[in-house]
Length: 439
Image (cartoon, rainbow, N blue to C red; front, side):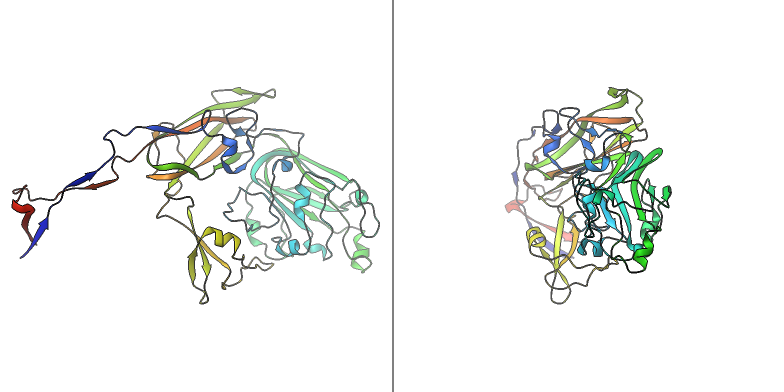
């Protein structure tokens, strides 16, 4: 048997035995909801001061104009893009080629009817457009209309440059056909066809249909009798200019999102219980009214970290391998890999962005939605926190108003603890040394 000598030391560095509990709070008298969001979709900051709720649409306003930023790509290249948090509108299969060719589909949803996307010459097979609102919203009208002034290159008044033939289809959620479209010729209708117009004479098109939730809208320009000239080579671009696209309906979305910024707590803390104050509501004759039986719910997820970024960024090396870089270099110095019209990404080369992975060494993963206020927060010790809220409703008129959210915090009880190891039958050996047998 082997014997080992053990030096016994005793030291303790600790904070006060009873750490003071503090509250970190959002909403109410805490941090303002509107100044601490990094992303939000259809969140109302105005109707209930100090609180937030899903946006209620009155049925007359254009829902699309409520979204401030749109991506022209099916696969957005924005850093940190998450499905549903950025609305999209793209031409044909994915929008990449058409954006570089000058098709500015985002002009259709900018709230300015005088701006438009100039027609781009190519076969009619590429004349289909997809709108993704991000979340399902209540709708019963899809519309579009020509710009109020201006001229085409051939001298035609833009207000008279109508879509002569078209079809429009919609979907409440992601439609599997979206995974089947890689080329201009891969057009598919979405799940519900709401209009198939062989000959149109209206500059202001308003298509009414039974009220339902709508997330995706697809417009396709179909051949008309006027396309004979185009087919015979007498025209180089199709007819039809859109100044603005519309979606209208009354009620609240089926779900909306609020994602807070990554918020620094200023110090490392332990987390206690998570609380919130929320009120179920119903719109009654245009007035938001508290009720007990609202068909709506709120999901709260949280995560904590030990630094200000939950991601680790990489670039490609000369050998095609990846190495870690700062976010600043990743965003400002490295180039996004080129993508083909089929959305394929070019192979890794020096100077190009590589992968982004989750920093699980310093950040917890998002918690499952917390169902009950007052439960222990599923967070580990850290100095940064982030909150994700999902408001859901199964009624056009019911929703949840969130007034405030808070979590208990306390400084760690001990910054460093060093204890002693001793034999049970020799707790204080002479000279602080003892012998034990290993085996």
